[in-house]
Length: 209
Image 1: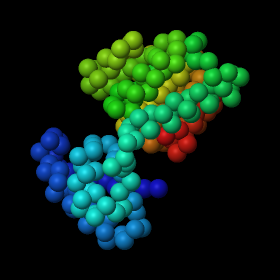
Image 2: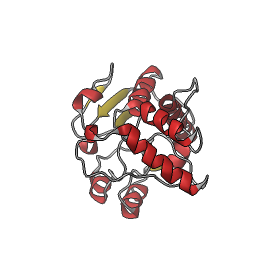
Image 3: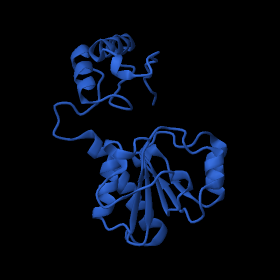
Image 4: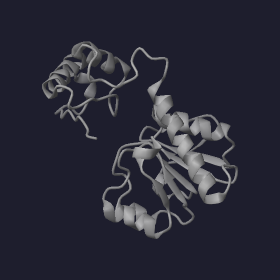
């Protein structure tokens, strides 16, 4: 697997002409002649994927276009399934009524995950986002700092590399699990090792989403 990353000098991405950008990305995909397929990810959306599908002649794009499936809901469903599976294996039951969750990142996937955890009867669901308004999800408790707020279950659904060595070492006691949608939640292997040594069960994103 690999990421297609478009570097931009614009701090405000709203200045970018999206259709032209996707047409440039399509040229790269055509040049690779099927050696790479891509889909929706950070800072892209359905409209971008429509542009990309058009520019590639409906080739090389795996983004659920012309499908009844919402790819964000599908990703969130996979995360939820991994959460329940982890709890069932580790505790003998998929019951989450005694667990407190922190959903880090409340975009389309994180918001769906948080709502589903509430529906499934989680004891407490804390939400955190760079944009505080996004963390205001019905029946959830917005928090300012996910890295210093205790929880049983951390659910990363935001940018990669957020769990640094410092975060891993100083995360409040009591955390048992880390399962989410973030591609690479750990800043480096040392951060991951610290969580492992603390007994935190982590399921890789390649499985969970």
